[in-house]
Image (cartoon, rainbow, N blue to C red; front, side, top):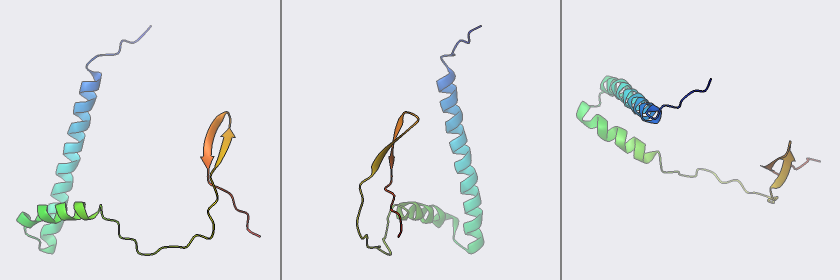
Length: 93
């Protein structure tokens, strides 16, 4: 007995995922709106604060840089017939 793959399945799945994303966005917006109202941010400024926090999350400010003594090349390791790139092992003395 073979199953027939319905042609509408990708469309229905895509609509379901879109609906799920919209639902999560609306719930999050309501929860964040409630939180911003509790701390005193007006509702008209809530969207601006959320947009600025989203844009600010893409900026990476390095706080600390660690010096590297020496960099070893990555090693190709074959496990069960599959090749993986493994970080180098350095044994401590």
